[in-house]
Structure formats: structure tokens, C-alpha cells
Length: 355
Ligand code: CP3
Image: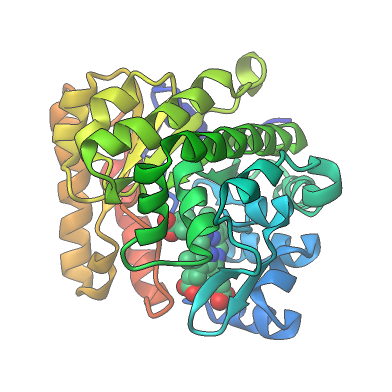
């Protein structure tokens, strides 16, 4: 299998590239009219995610419009707790919910790593189909939620404004919290490994809620499990090895620790500059990010200026070289964003970073 465009994988390995690669978190989604049309036909988000043909179709949609350097599997981080028996469902306008949230020690004791083929075979089927349809155009990214972020949804039973239940559990019964995080970590490792074996060429862990923890609690309840994933997750062999990206919202205080985790790349939000991130991580890892997604609401001129500023900030801290940087947003796109402005972002990354 030869990739026609491998600049994303080369950047993750910190090898030279002809121009900086770019992809966008949530690049497939409601901001695209063709996504809304497919979702309408499918009936719901979950029906779409659980159908490999439809998941493949929406994965490819943004690539038909923009010159993106990677595809990301269309799925959701909450498929793993769903497979663990929690019963995922979506309420229109309210986001994800679980029928059976984890609330007691007995609930935690019942949790087990799900059988990947039986419970999550629709995900690996989608990975295989997407790889076939991509036919080497760009690499495919697989992903999972981080153990702490998945635990947030599992204990809260859905999204939460203050994460009161999951934080109370961590403080009152840290032993139980660690048991929960340990089994979720085992499931995450098995899930990422299954995606890689099905054909995912890079793997990203989304620690969306790590940043809501006080530093001593992040170091107790999120960081050790990210580090365990980095240490234990098989990457595959040689040239086929799938690099691991640890993305964290609010992970700026922990960049040194994350760079020492064994992951190949760190993704961060926009509250730290790429220059500072590069200086603090010392070139040990590739960096991914980190334009504020709200930049996409600004004028084309402002978007271009911010993209150029971010690219040049990284290069200035990296000895004048753009190598080792994957351009991305600092978090996911929103449904009300304008596809025309996305094109401006993607094209500016490529034009400005051409070597
Ligand atoms: O990036 C991509 O294009 C790949 C697909 C992807 C989705 N969710 C599709 C999706 C990825 C990588 C995710 C990850 C995810 N899911 C995260 C971590 C990333 C992040 O944003 O920090 C989280 C926290 C979730 C949980 C989740 N799933 C929420 C909170 C929601 C509701 C959001 C909303 O806008 O209503 C979802 C549903 C979801 N996952 C949608 C999409 C495109 C919207 C579904 C729809 O209504 O069509």
C-alpha cells in the first residue's frame, strides 16, 4: 500500500515534508450540507455512525471539498462506553446521554472490556471500507476518548456543566475511580489496537475534559492513563507504524509531561502558543494544532493572518523549520461554520508553508 500523500505521517515522524499537513477536528459534520443530507436519510447520528457505508460516505465528504492531508474515521468517542453496556442515545439539542450511567462501586465492578468484534465490529468494518475507498489518497486517523474523558460521560450520564458527580467520585472514592479508569484504559487500548489492525494509520486520543481538573487531580486521574496508553498501545511495524497523538483541551500546563509520555505527537488548544509549546517540548514530539476554531467566524483576511502567524510562530521556535508540525484547530469545528472559510484556512496553510 503506497500513500499518494503521506505528509501527515511524515510530519508526525518529524521527517521533512514539501508543505505542512492540515486536517481539522470534526471536519465531517453539520457545517457541511452534504453531511446534513446523509444524516437526514440515515435518520439519526447513531444510525449513521453504526452503518459502515454511511460512516465511510461522511468521512470522505470533507476530502472532496478541501485539500485535507488526512481523513478521520467518522464515529464517536462514546461508542466504547456504549459497547460496555451503558446504552448511548442522543436527545436532539441536548447531546449524548447514557441510559445506565455508572454511579456506584457495584456499577464499576460490572464493567469489562467489550469484545471488539462483537460490540464494535461496525467501527472496524468502517475503517476497512474507508481505507479501500481512500485507495491511498491520504492516511486514515482512528481515535478514542481518553479514559478520564470517557469516565466523565459514564459517571455524569451525559454532558455536564461542572462535572460534579465524576469529581465527587474521584475525591470521595479514589480507589473506585482508579478501578473505573483502569478498565476503561484497557478498553481504549484494545479499541485503538483493533482500529490500527483494521487499517487506521494514525491514532488520536481526545482528552476533552482533562483541563477541567485541578493540576494535582489531572496528574492523578488523567495523565497516568494517557501515559499507560502511550506505553502499552502497539503501533505496528516499521514503515507501517501508526503514530499516537495525545490531544487535550486545556493540556498546556502539562506539555513537558505529555512529551515524555512516549506518544509521538501532542495536540493542544489555542491557550498556548505553538512557539512556547515547541520550546517546552524540546523537539521530542511532533505538535498538532492549534488555531482557535472561532477564527473561522472572522473575515478571510483575518483567517489568513492568523494561519500565517501560527505557522511562523512554530517555525521560529523550531530553528526556522516547519517540520514536525501538523496544522489543525485547537478544538472541533461547529455546525454554524462556513465551508468557504474552511477552504481559505486549508489553502493558506499549504500556500504559506510550501518549502
Ligand atoms: O472529527 C471528525 O470529523 C470525526 C468524528 C467525531 C465525532 N465526534 C462526530 C460527531 C469525533 C472525533 C468525535 C469525538 C467526540 N465526541 C468528542 C471528543 C472531541 C471533542 O470535541 O473534544 C466528544 C467529547 C464527543 C461526544 C459527543 N458526540 C458530543 C458532545 C456530541 C454532541 C455534539 C453536538 O454538536 O451535538 C456528539 C455527537 C457528534 N459526534 C456529532 C458528530 C458530527 C454531532 C451529531 C449530529 O447531530 O449530527
